[in-house]
Length: 615
Image (tube, rainbow, N blue to C red; front, side, top):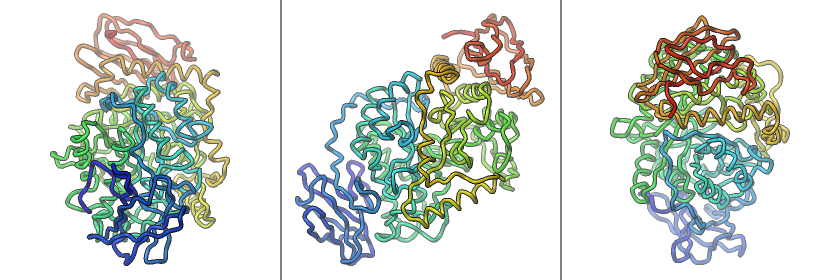
């Protein structure tokens, strides 16, 4: 049972081509296992196999049947590999046949990673209804904006109906309140019809607290390590083979059975694995087998807080083979450059000097001393292409993990928001937007949960309060259990047609269009990047090249006009965009063309792009 079958899901209940149900459960320490069918109230014993697996093939179980497993004639538990929990995390599992969905995306081909312009969203708060079906109604809007990939925050079943998704306890199960497995398949199919790639956020570093029954089946966790969120998953201790198979099969399922294009893997620095082959590398190797069988193309993108290129280097170069990683350091440097406070881990960043280094070197800390960490940190990333790094000015963590959940729109001026947007979209990396930022959504995105266990709910409240002590925050954090925290985090779609939100939306759309159409911006060659940092003026000049095209991005983070000179000659420099123009609610129109070298007085808090040729 330990061999990975990339062609089909094996764990849980699956239906073969003859319509028979194949049941597989891993419970190595059980003496007896039965499956209880709720519709007929009958119990069927499973057969013990090697390595602790229990199996059954039967024509009695049909799609739609609800069931639980009975361990040693005592505990009735839902399926660890359940595909549906119609009554929530404590209820019975429901058998689902993933093969019956009528896919129409056979002509879809995943776009190159370098072309990803990603839009991160949370299913429950992206639309008023908070479902996959209602999300489909907004896809044309995203396509029109210029987005090429959506990134969906985790959808694995969690307790209640309100959660960011990082408290999932059934990794194979799609949240019932979002619409379940078939609705997710339908959403992905529709995305592909519209030319959108789909990234799914998954959590392989911990399992949520409420409804987590994994330990009652097998040694899914280990005491060797700790994580900030609970017991560490057992990837290298006794009985780890079954755990590894569980998560490898999970990753393959999303690609094969849901046609997901990429996985964003949450906080992989919290995955503890000293095996000869790291679990991430093994997932990559199994994905390679799947791609060979199907001819498909998929990506693995990791959230990583280690500045360690081993994660994103190819396997044949001694790495784990991940395609790309988030770099929070770009965000931190950008945030401090915008004049926001330097508390907590932001204290390590020196405004535009750090931002200039992020443009040039990807990692701000690449072997240098970090005062926040009290040690030298990181390695250099000279050989890693721009498409291996995801950058952003906002994301769910950086907004929602503020005590009050304020977005940039509440913290910064309209002009500074435009500057931050330009700073991200002109970068030599993969840009990502957080839902609503493109029209300056003023509503907060707060942390919310809906645990039914009162003790757990209180522990979450206390945990949030303690977390903010490191940032010296005063006042009380909003109650994450409140319905208001969830409802207040929903996007206000009616604002897009109102000013100044309409202007910001048009500005973002134009920026994305420029990035796509100018080869010096769309080709992510880090070797053709030059950065000048004028600390005294708080100005960055970012020059990017491709063949004979030069694109110059000028960023003034100061509150004053600043004169800047760029000693790069061209017979004519053409303005692509200037955030200070009246068109974008600015007060100063910059010249459409400049001859020779560029000499400009940059308005305060402004972003400007000139190019030596149109394309």
